[in-house]
Image (cartoon, rainbow, N blue to C red; front, top):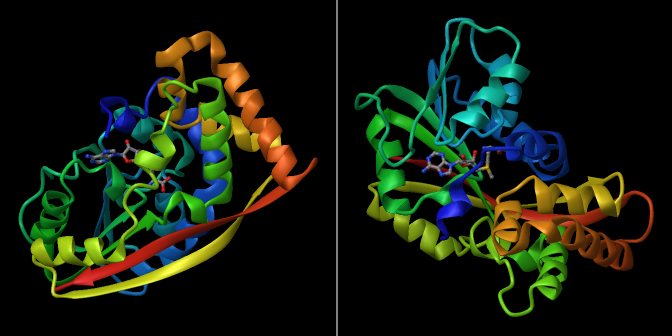
Amino acid sequence: MAASDKVFAGSIPKFYDTLMVPLIFEAYAVDMAGLVAAFSPGAVLETAAGSGVVTRALAPKLGADARYVVTDLNQPMLDYAATRQPADTRIEWRQADALGLPFDDASFDAVCCQFGAMFFPDRIAGYAEARRVLKPGGHFVFSVWDRIEENAFADDVTNAVATVFPDDPPRFLARTPHGYHDVAVIREELSRAGFGSIEIATREKVSRGSSASAVATAYCQGTPLRSEIEARDASLLQLATDCATEALVSRHGEGPVAGKIQAHVIVAAG
Ligand SMILES: C[S@@+](CC[C@H](N)C(=O)[O-])C[C@H]1O[C@@H](n2cnc3c(N)ncnc32)[C@H](O)[C@@H]1O
């Protein structure tokens, strides 16, 4: 993983939340909120919460006395999330690395993490941290994207942007968000972190954008792919976005576009 892959700062939080979240994160967030709420947890920790799409879906489902601690590595993402969340005394916002959680052992009934584990430099360490802070009988609910070929827009954008930088194609999307999809590896790493019960479901959904241009802008400017493009040549960000738009139009047509997305949803305990 490149150092810039985990930096969600600058203009990324706003573009991420307004463009990427409705495109691919919101539908999975609703599912995750339902899964976590079904355990009726008294205390919940969310890691890698980003701009708060799961927080917005889960908070209304938790009990009046629940404690909900919402964390992310990047403070700018949490700052953005807080602006979108109605005042709620049950929620504590806190910057935290999922690999070194500033919480006591056995503090939470549930830990949830939507599309964050791919960014952990050491997943076993991250899973062991989640397990450490869980009470006996608690659940760790998290999700990761399936391989990039199962996620149409990400694949199309990656291939199109590569044509702008043929000698050094930006591979952020393939390398990190879509780089951790082997369910056998996920099971093995959870087992090595100490989890005994592991359920993995692969969930396909449809991503819908108002236009090819909106989708291209979301991926090229609302994710760390932006930093990767700018590091090569900042003046080519718009050209790269335009190339991605053209590719999406040719694959998915003019006007509103729809493409397959697919993710693994994991519930671990024990
Ligand atoms: C793709 S976003 C997912 C955000 C949110 N969960 C969602 O579904 O929209 C990945 C998030 O992981 C965070 N992140 C990266 N490395 C992390 C780490 N080591 N610990 C905690 N959060 C991390 C990033 O700051 C970013 O907000």
